[in-house]
Image 1 (cartoon, rainbow, N blue to C red):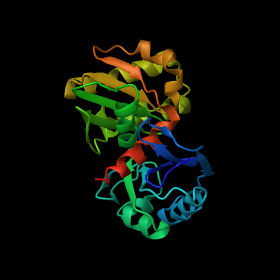
Image 2: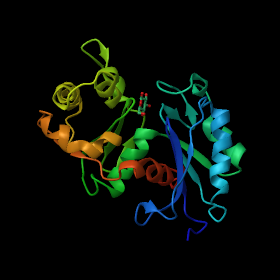
Image 3: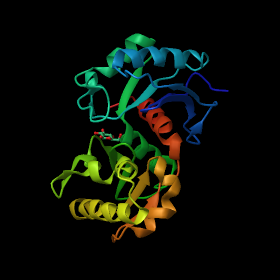
Image 4: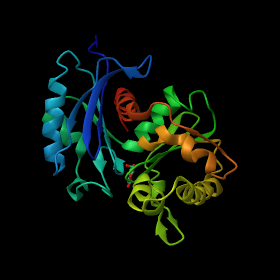
Length: 251
Ligand code: BGC
């Protein structure tokens, strides 16, 4: 059973909003996760109502709450909304959700949450130096973690490469939208990761997002010099990373 000290993680995604209390010792859910479908109009106010509903399913969990958001977050305020309702821009999400739920809520960029979780519990556990975690989904999310410390809001999905916003060419949504073969997509990913390599010289790339379940189809085809491995926490990374972030008092 969850004790009151356990933090709660919420992963706010395009199709579902998932939440669970997290055991920080193991980096796993402390109770079975619950999921509520994301409403068509996913404005901050609509989402706040869903968080109240979700938290009500875990009455014995009263710890801090971490929430992922696919945008830039500084001191709880959301500053960008590439793939979500534009009403998020300028919203003090920490304040809004804390008031709505009566709980201490800390909002964190979705890729940063995944990055924290992978470095603490997953594919990059125990790795030193610079680790870059990327999530390949609707957009491309990125987390820069140096010796376990996150440098937030790197937003490397929006690098301009060959005159394009990188995620518009190399996200998993571009692969499905354009019906690209794995080989063709891997060529685009090679260009993308080579650019990151040149700019940051990381020790390791970790590749997350739903498509990382099929990593054997495309990771071996990416031609770069840096080690590149699949994420391990898969669809748990957001919830676990958000809870971890909240447990440390947010940013
Ligand atoms: C957003 C990022 C987010 C990423 C993955 C990008 O379009 O700008 O903030 O981390 O998508 O969801």
